[in-house]
Picture 1: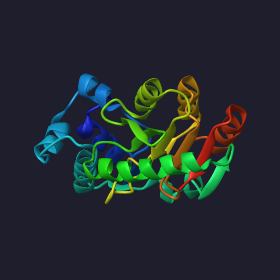
Picture 2: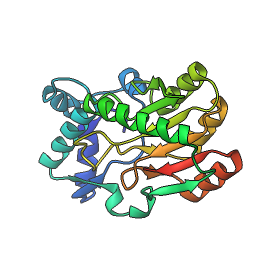
Picture 3: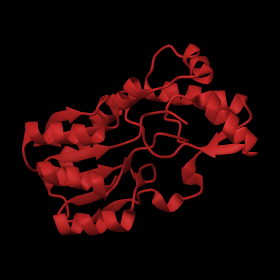
Length: 216
């Protein structure tokens, strides 16, 4: 199926006898605007929307599938071990200045989430140097690193009232590689509500790179 072929996907699932499905993986928002091939199902979803903000769009997609007989459930119901635990998970203990930057990032990410804009904030020495928008997490980190220089703190948290069936914040080894590019030193994620991709590899890489990973 091509991106946007909601009716085609629903038809295929029903034909296979599927009555539950999960949303997994990522689709870049910029890419989705350029490369979608909408079918009748996609247009039916679009008619429900007042805008194309993430949470509103995903809820409308889930409602379309559920009306068609396929219930959307949370992937983390089946793999709870991928959720970030609380505390220092890898790397050096945070300095007092880094802990202050984490708190600033958490506060700003909360406001960002209320507007359903993004989930990632980059902070350096008390100043917010980047917030995530349509470009996604990796590019927000790159922009924050270029603007703030080395030593930035990256904070990710869920949006207030977010539907936990989809679009949970996620981080993995690729996130750390992007942080290494720009010299970012701390990745702080919301414990119990952030997916850590390839967790063992992520922690090993964090130790090797000297990047602190923290579950808030």
